[in-house]
Length: 178
Image (cartoon, rainbow, N blue to C red; front, side, top):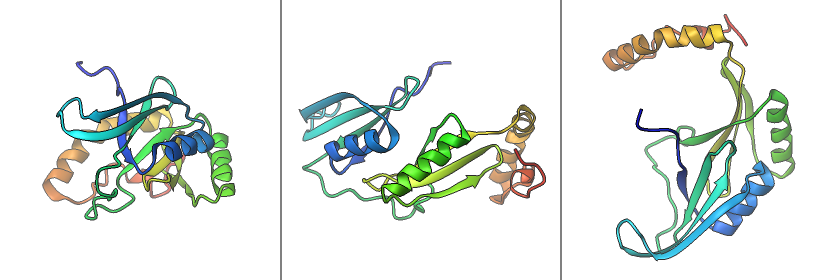
């Protein structure tokens, strides 16, 4: 396989310093690198930016660009806010519950925990309006095998019908829980 792992994922931010402070305070993600230029290296466009890189654990990097000379940030208004999000893995259900309590104590609205059968998660927004998810995996090997066996049938049926296939309805109908 050509791709080994994600090198980094980059989003835009309103303010680099505020973003670094927020991610460190609420998610314990440390700043590992900052790059600032007055010209975009790939396009050579004159466009000053600050590019910050945060440690998302296990060699994963979450990056942001502050672009002060560009129009204010927006989002794709044709895509519901719940669709575009970044999911970050936590080690236990207790970690999830503790994170929810810390976020809410800081005045951050949190949705969940939501039970997705193979994982449980909470949702909230960062100061830039990006939706974040903290997720704890709780699926059993049997559940994962069942999903693996039907993945292509589901994709192919969806491609034909644009209706939700029922191959894994057990995930949300309560017939099998983690």
